[in-house]
Amino acid sequence: MIYQLVIDTNVFLSALKSSRGASYKLITLIGTGKFDLNISIPLVAEYEETLRREIHHISENAIADILDYICVVAKRHKIFYLWRPILKDPDDDFILELAVKSNSWIITYNKADFKKASYFNIKVMTPKEFLRLIGEIP
Image 1: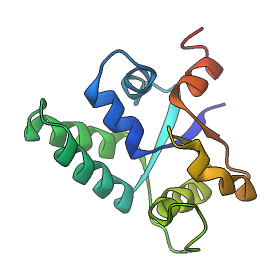
Image 2: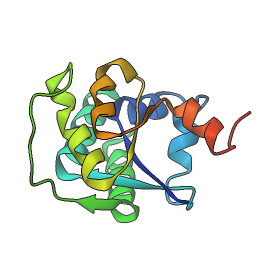
Image 3: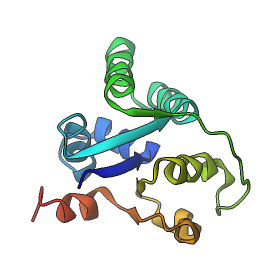
């Protein structure tokens, strides 16, 4: 079984701030066949905006290279339906829409914000929980 994932921006941000945590380990597994990453234009735009604003120790070119790689290896989806607002933070609704469209699990540090994802049978996990599930960490 290949897991389908949507990775929240906070996980990417954490991974680029430190190479010692679960988020970094998860990001290093993108493109290895351990799971499929699913993206949409709004999600990639949020990745780009947030990383460029928050990450100062990595060059703009390196951030662009990371995003280019993600766009090459991830499954791309167009979202044609909007159910907004559903979630506690309406800015996260596009992540839920992508997860529903791609039948993915959401990987985030803000699990509480995605409680209503269960209405759509979408699982929500932290990077550490997912890595344990797939046997990448004890």
